[in-house]
Length: 220
Image 1: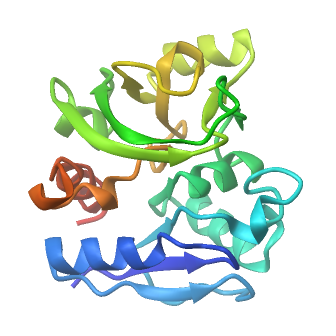
Image 2: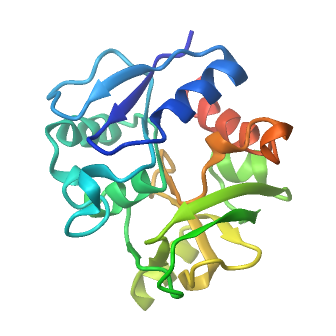
């Protein structure tokens, strides 16, 4: 059975959604990891969930990026361990410099909560290969989800095919419609939309299951 570590910060509020999605969709019970831990348990992958870690003080994800557990997460990723950061988790990944760029205040200056359509970009990672050609309907819920990176960084993302998801209709003003990117080795994925909230037609879509399946395929 896959061993997935689910990191919890003060203010995380999507950890239960992730746990439920993994249990119902794949019969996986993730191991909860509190932010003060300095070592990770024996796990195959790590999830950084959404929410409002530390109340989003300073910047979303800024304080969480300095939590003791993040040193262990960085070391895990450095060794090739797969990591996914969702919404606030994506913000933590950029604040930790595990992924390039930053998540800025939405262009509308308003919190956005709605279903969006995601288009998968071409690339060579398991996410690109398993999802390319598909449009995924997944919800977003964020006030600081506008992805930004400098022109040189954007060129590098495109050249290295690190962009995974783009919005079909941009809800927040993100540069180049970017909704999700991967690290250079393709093992760390950050995305603003919530695939854990799209795992059952009763929720409006089950397209999130394919995203989780791709995540599991990184180590299974």
